[in-house]
Length: 123
Image (cartoon, rainbow, N blue to C red; front, side, top):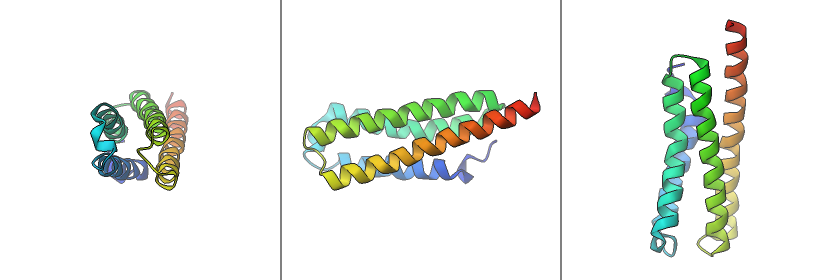
């Protein structure tokens, strides 16, 4: 705990958030302030909650924030699907970003599992 900058999933989440900002800055996506803002906030939330969770004093608290991050990843996936369906993203970009977000979700699932296991050993 307390080494969030060393977590690969945190680094990946930063890359995702940066990529989302770049995608949403281009037309026609940039014209849809509501969806652009929502997906940006969800993407930022992933990395932010990983950092906050890792800085918490216990695995139990960390797990709670990692679960929030995982939920935010699901939000990003949902919003990517909407953006694709309304024509803001081409299929290649959509698949690439969706797959990367799914990778982050899977990494968070593993991190939660590891922290639960560590927590069980300490009890």
